[in-house]
Amino acid sequence: MTDAQMTYQRVGAERISGRNASRIMHSLARHRKVVVGLTILAVVVAAAVFAHWLAPRDPQAQNLSQAHTPPFWLAGGQPEYPLGTDYIGRDVLSRLIYGARVSLLVGFGGVLIASLLGIAFGLLAGYFGGWVEAIVMRIADTILAVPWILFVLFVVGILGSSLVNVIVIFGITDFPLFTRTVRGEVLAVREQQFIDAAVSIGAQPWRVLRSHVLPNIAGTVITVATFELASMVLWEASLGFLGLSVPPTIPSWGNMMAEGRSYLRSDWWLATFPGIAVMLLTLGINLTGDGLRFVLDPKSRGRE
Image (cartoon, rainbow, N blue to C red):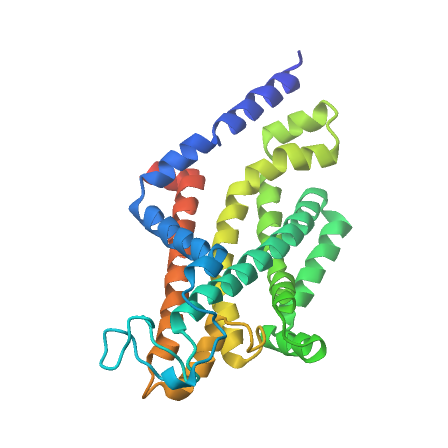
């Protein structure tokens, strides 16, 4: 066995054993803020998945006789409407639960599209360099040069507001961040000894990228994706507040805040509760992201 083959196997084995799932889960469980973040995220995901069973009422059902009912702990509140009703008698709690679906679908869908595009382009640019890198980075720079809100207005003006359009918009506008991040990581990884060893024994570029480069940058990509998920939840709420997200017939936290801003003096709960929901979800995601960054970053682990 040649020195290159021995180096290739030794370093590869160390890389695989150093990233086992049990160690990562054990490290995550030792950090209180990660447990808090995962708990918040799990509660929101469960609410979104089981909204049909958890929501006490149809989120679109109107009851004008119960309009402007305050939360149950205030004067005039009713136990059957724990968080009150809006200006046409729709149950706020039910709309909050169903609104979690929109935030999570937009967040996870946008991150999925952005990460897949960013990883593919970043791997190509970082590993092959040359004209491939030049073309990929100019595409990313072009997208970054377009003001985000103008791109949103352009797409919504042509295609209309819908859940799919919002997800696609977020995926396209956010993938340059993943491309730049992945490219930088690949530039560092491709100089490592085990990459040279793999190439020297005849490994094809696609196998090197799939089996050796990608696993070594997965930690960084996962961390970036976690924080971008929180950003997309905020972006969706912002677009919903401006009327550029999903149609008003679909309950979402951004739409609820937009509808409630006209009633802040009288029915403060209409905008307050969806705002708190957005804050808690982004907090949970960011706490989880902090934990992932700590566990997946060897320098951070060394400072513990």
